[in-house]
Amino acid sequence: MNSRFQQSNHAAELLAEQIKLLYQQAPKALIVSLIIAAALTFVFWNLVATVWLVSWLAAIYLLTFARFLLIKSYFRKNPAITESPVWGRRFLIGTLLSGILWGGAGSILFISGSAMHQLFLAYLLGGMVAGAMATLSSYKWAFSAFSIPVVLPFTYQVITHESDIHLILALTYLLFVFAMGSISHRLHHTVSDSLKFRFENFDLLKRLIQAKDRQNTINRLLQTQIEEKDRSQQALQTVKEQLEQRVMERTEALALANDVLYHEKELFQVTLASIGDAVITTDSSGKITYLNPVAEIFTGWHNQDANGAPLQDVFNILDTTYP
Image (cartoon, one colour):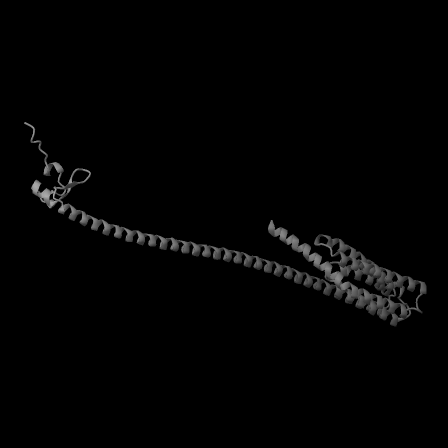
């Protein structure tokens, strides 16, 4: 679906470019046609009725002026692709009318008794056809719309004289026009292919730019992830260092506390050993943890032997007052 839409869009763009080429090449061709029209009028001034010459020349100039206005309007409006076919048809109508007027010259300016003027007219009309081949080939049917009306009246005038020279002239003229038509056809395909290649290259370039943009986006995302990973690692390293510092501080504090407890225990035992009274210490379950020397004498137990023994096994209290 997307491929068909893209092909349809390319076809519309191709047609728009072909029509744009018509309008771009037309101004110079119109100026040349005005010069040729004036030259024909000058050459045939004394050979053709003045009213016909003036009428034909005025029609050429009026039509050319109208076509100049059409060209100016086209470039001023700069139509969208969807509007281009309308402008193409307008140009085609102007081309057809111009071909009819120049074909009229093939009848009006045809001098039966002057082979030189006939050849001169054939030369100029052939030049107009050749010029049309160069300027109208970008748009299909534009060359035919101009050249056919130009060729037919003059060819008819030549053939109707039914002389060998005129038949040769007619055949030569038609052969030339046919050759111009064949060249125009090939030129049209060349222009079309060139425009197609340009659109294909443009699409390829567009896809390359899109791919590059996607790659840049991916690279930015990867870079962001790498930076986030680095920040996470730095944060973890910081936390790890803080934990290690705390463990070291706690270990140092615990070691200091153990030293304090050890010294206090030694001081406690020295104190207990120096007391003249018997002292026995037990844990929460009633098991002996320490006997001072006086208690060892009274109980008959050594501190090492009594350590961990139940209190009642080492020390028994007797009531001597009981009968």
